[in-house]
Image (cartoon, rainbow over all chains, first blue to last red; front, side, top):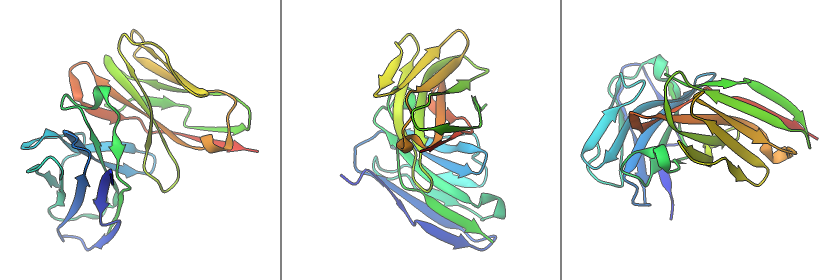
Length: 116
Length: 111
């Protein structure tokens, strides 16, 4: 099993460009989420999904869109990139459809995004 | 609201002990602990649930005080491999579908 796979690993965007960060898991996990990590800020929750067709906002959702058409995939879309979105993005999944309160999060290796 | 971790950083010699604390202003249902090495993804250590027991993992253990809305991670006889940043993640009683992380505690262990 590959676990949680994120692509690309690195990306440079110009302000105003759009792009999609890909996340796929092969563990049949119901719960998937996106976090961003900035120095001194820890991991902040952007969006999450408790199953296919269901998404909700986390702590810092502005400027990002998500959809969950399949159990395996949970892409994160940046609509119009801004320098403030420069960060490392982690996708994480967990098996419980109740949420991650009682099951470990499995993280992908991250996408390092720079917006100039 | 993010849980608060303390201290922000710890420097240890091999064999020394450390305690990392995590506190929340909201009622907690569960607390997770993760360790992240530089340039890598966070790795799961343990989960503590409301009403559960203290957990242990080799020389790393943790407790969860529901009344004080706090959790502590205990690292005993630290090893070089313990170096990294430790994060607690909390889930509230009414938000079990979200895991909110603290800002992290950086631990450095020297020979």
